[in-house]
Every structure is written in structure tokens, then in C-alpha cells.
Length: 459
Image (cartoon, rainbow, N blue to C red; front, side, top):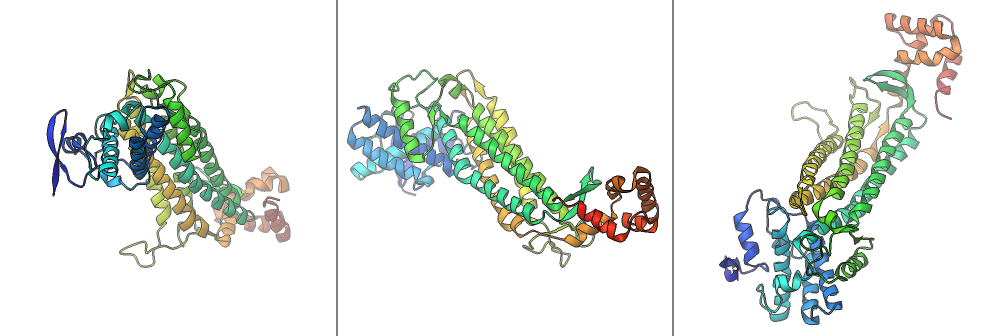
């Protein structure tokens, strides 16, 4: 591997020749190779966006000359567009402020800007990573801002559309199944009849509420720490820097980000990320409940509930021929488990705000964005590969209703409590259906019993 020499405050170091980053990033990469986990692209893209808007802002404020500002802006745009993702080499387990990754971004952008201006990669001249790329900023306000930007954009542009697609697919099934009576269940025991459509309408509403919770959390994510610099006082940042930079960020993203109401809160705490993770966890719990119900309702085909049929995607067993498993619901359930685990990590990391800075920012960023990405994929798969192809087994639903002793509850207004109780007890002892006992005792005619079942359907 070809290398070049670069210097930082600790002395000379060899940097890969094709790298835009410099000695500081290289040292950090060599000294902390803990997990091999890297920041996800949305986070790196958000860093590029911040640096691009900062360069334009510093030009407008007269703090940066046009030549440097335009070169920085072009290089930062390449980071925003994902063209330099391979230059972000640092492990997420690093200094808790994310300073290493902020400097990685500064060095990559400076190195690329220098190549644009001189034809040579890397270095600190004419564009310096700190003096020019990081002008008016600190890792302590940049990294929290990048977390908020990346999370809000991923939720708005990816997760909510994915969840909304699932919600609509479930609601469509609710409409399709609205006339199919089935037995309800509580405590895993037979309860009174409902329709399959009513059951699916409950799932649709769960997803709808998950979307509402996420949209509410967006309001807190929209506050950015930019302008607070090291501890929230705004030291070394132009008083108009944050307002100008955030205005440009909004033009780029079509969002409504705003400067933090209180910079000391914005940097010392990560409550907005904790809240957002809680909304993601709730969505995961909802997804798990829906997926579990679906796989139970489809259990069988002959010795289970068998009230619905799932699309067949792949053989379900390496040893049992003809077995088809609920692959997608099970994948969704595992995603839910991961998101719930991520939420625990984020909650603990949220407690890592010591005095004026939270010192667990990298793992908050990683876990928050992973949860968003996983839920986006799981909701889309559940909609496309499972829910959209579900069909009802009407005969099994009807047979379960007639076999259920809970049907006797609906007979009370027709034949009275005592007769209904008698029917239920005798049906249980004789292992017969409610219909069979009612007809045997001539409490109702077969036509009246059929009309009675029809009346159970919602109007």
C-alpha cells in the first residue's frame, strides 16, 4: 500500500496515499479498532450537509474567502451524496463526543478541497481542517446536530412511508374481511365472536398510532445544537452562524429545523434521541404483536388455528417435506427484539450526559439509525411479502365459531340466560356444537339459528 507522510500535534505518521483524511484520523483508526462497526451512511451524509451549509454561511458572513468556501462546499457535497463514504474509517466506539469522526469529516473535506484547488490530496493547505472546514463549529454541537438531522430525515423519508404502506395494507384487509365472523380469543381461550375485519382494523390502528408518535418526536428532533460550540456558550461562533446555517439546511432538506431553544440542554442531554427511540420501541412492540397474531392465525395447515392463509415464500423445513413457515412475520419479530435492545442501549447512553456534554453520542447515533432502518425494512417486507397476500379461510372461521361455547353468550337475549347456560354445559359435556344442542332441544329452528349468526355480522 502506497503511503504519504503527514504531521499532526503528535508527530509524523504515514497515511494511505488514496486517503483524503490526515494523520489525526489515521491515528484514531489505528488506536481504537474495537468492533469494526462504522457510522451508517445517513449520519455521514448529515455531517456533509452541515459542513456544506457551514462553508456557505461563513462565506456569507465574510469569515471565509470564496475560493476556499466553494472548494469546501463541493467536497462536503460529495460527502453528502455518499461519494466519500469509504473515507470514513473510524469505529463507532471512540471518544464519547464523536470528536474523532467530526475530525475525520473535517480532514476528508479539507483533503478533497485541497485536491480540487491544487491537485494534491490531503494536507492542511490551502484548506485547513480546523481553521476552515470546522469554522464556527465544535464536535460538541456538530455531532448532536448530525444525529437529529439524520434521524429526522430517515424517519420522515423512509420509515413513515413504510409504516403507512403497512397501515394501508392492513386496513385493506380489514375492509376485505369485514363480513367474516370468527371466534375472538382472550387468555388464549375462546371468547365471543368478532369479525376477521375487526381484528385487522386493530392492527391498522396500532400502526397509525406508531406513525403519530414518530411525528410527535420529530418536533424535538428538529432542534439543532449548531451554534453552541464547545459547551453551549457559542464561543468562537459568529452570533448569526447557527441561524444562517440552519436556514440553508432547511432549504436542502425541505424540513423545518431550528436552533435549539437552550444550547446547554441540547449538548448536555440527548433526551430527544431517547424519546425518539422510545417511539421506535413502541412501533417495534406493535409490529411484534401484529406479526405474532398473523403467524398464530395462519398456524396449521390442519392442526392449528388456520383462520388465514399466508403467501408461501420458501420451504419451511430441511427435514419435513411440504412444511411452509411464516418467514416474514418471524423476521419482523426478530427485528422488534433488536430495536427493543437498541432502545435499552440508547436509554443507558442518554444517562451519559455529564455536566455540559453527553459522552455516549456515537452509540446513540448508531443504534438510533439502525432501529429506523430495521423497522423501515421490516414494515415494507411485512406489507409486500405477507399482509398483501393474506387470504381468509372462511370455512375454518365459521366452524370455529359454531364449535365455541362462547356463542352461548349471544343466545341469552334469544332464549334466556338459563337455557343458554344449559346449552353451553351440555355442548361441553357431549362435545357437540351450540347449534346441535339448540336444535336438539328445539330452542330455535335451523333458519332462526342461521339468522342469529347473520345478525352477529356488523352492519
